[in-house]
Structures are given as structure tokens and as C-alpha cells.
Length: 113
Image 1 (tube, rainbow, N blue to C red):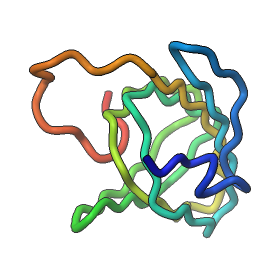
Image 2: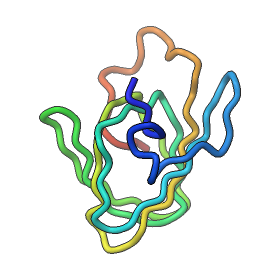
Image 3: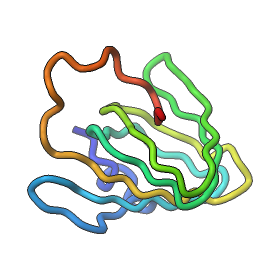
Image 4: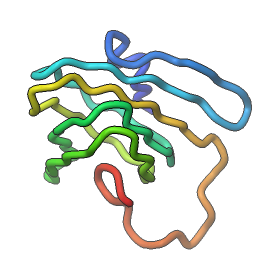
């Protein structure tokens, strides 16, 4: 697994970790990019409004999120670019337990509601 703390240590850092969850803080500036990395199923909490372009394989999506939102993030590998004019500040609560079998269909690139 491409751990974002290892692949992008200047942007991600661990706030808390135990056997069940890991909590990451992400901070960037306009124009900053991440290298490809993976997240398990997570809850993302936006602490700032931001615009971002996410890429995974041939898929690309642009997201714009307001501050103080909580969104689900399916397990995924992606890279991203801050395409806005404000810094990004988010918290990721990464789940360590396996996803239930069967799921709700294919994973969504980027956050979902």
C-alpha cells in the first residue's frame, strides 16, 4: 500500500492511531500536488473550502468542497492537485477494519456525500 504519510510526508501527518483507526491531517497550498497514494475507507472532514483535481488511472475528477463538511471516501488510490486559490486543510479518519463483503457497488473517486 502506498501510504500517504510515506509518499507525501510534507503534506500528511498522523494525529492519532490505534488498532481500529488512523487520523491524518492534510495541509497544502495552491498548486501543490501529491504523488499516487492509497486510502482505506475513510471519513474526510474539511476544515477549509478547497478545489482539487483527483486522478486515478484514466479517471479524473474535479471536486470543490466547502469548509466543515464530513464526507465518505471509498478506499482508493489517487493523486491530487490543489487547483484553487486557497490552502487545503482536511482531516482523514481512516478505518482499519475490512469493508463488509458485497459492498454498494464500485468505489467512487474522491469524496461522496
